[in-house]
Image 1 (cartoon, each protein chain N blue to C red):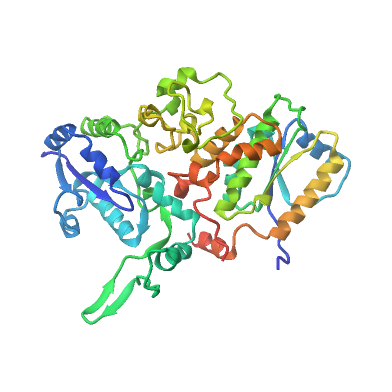
Image 2 (cartoon, helix red, strand yellow):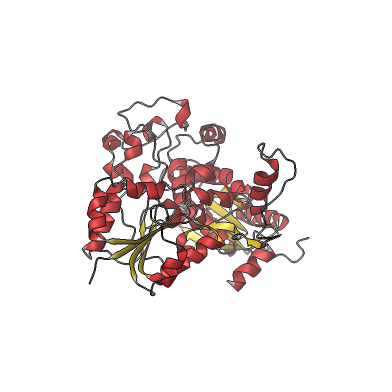
Length: 322
Length: 145
């Protein structure tokens, strides 16, 4: 038997997850030594037809990052699924929809209208919109369908494991690859990161008061945080208590609060609702007015709590009224 | 518009007060709107916002949370937590296109059977006016899926 065959693919993503693979730095040499990379559009010149030509289930592991926004991405995800023994949803977007998933808070029509008509950069006034099918002299051009909503990877294919993060850190990526190579994977469906809340691995955890109460929620640009004190205790909305650990609190080390990219803990089904619950309960007031005032520091609750997980939430998207 | 619309409402009632108020209303033979399906919880502070959204996802048109009056919580401050969470949840729901009026938090003590009856009737009427949470098209889509 030769080296395990590995593929990387990207859907609706920013490229940060691809960057994360490169961030393995010299660690990538170990990986490349141990596996054959058979498909990686961002770095290697293979085409879709090359994948199509492979026998089914001939790729050992596919790492797919990005959410599903276009029909082409769904087609590719299904192709990767068919050709692979194991598919890993890599990064926050593939796992729960990620940043692109925030588009589910806006209707498709409103998005297209803004981008192709209202946006100030549209100066020609023509308000042309790309069509799925366009006839030109040379024949018909076809674009993928822009879906009604953004989906997570497991909304369209069966996913074996999840690696969270925006992007996943080199450490958890390497650990996952090692686990695959050594055949030491947990049960199917597991999230390959920490299994406790981020606070447990945060240096500032010892400064978190036993009973955490704040009178005002603050946004990061409004305060200069004390560097050696729990950010949440300073009223800065750090989502560490409800977020899966594994990143070693990198953001907090850099003076920024956790925004929740590692997603929910094991028993939580709706990350945003849990985060909302946790944040609301630490506000130290019983007065409705003071409460409204405290929540002024939180002008965009859905965007804050569902920053990486709107498509995977119970509500999934903005309510459809028609 | 909403002729014949019968709202489905989920009520999360605290074991120590609102649930007892519902008992009292029942034993007192009070009549009120039958639209609220009651779930007994140990405390209104136990009502995780996840439960509210789960109810909406599964067809509820409104959610009523009943807790003890301020200062009366069996667990000291569970009702205050419920208040803060409901408040923030109601601020967030419009971003998902859901009217905040679909979630209501009420303090109803064990002796307030009449108040329970009034709240049940009022809230049912309020949801009836708001109409179904999910459009016919969404329901059709779901049925097809």
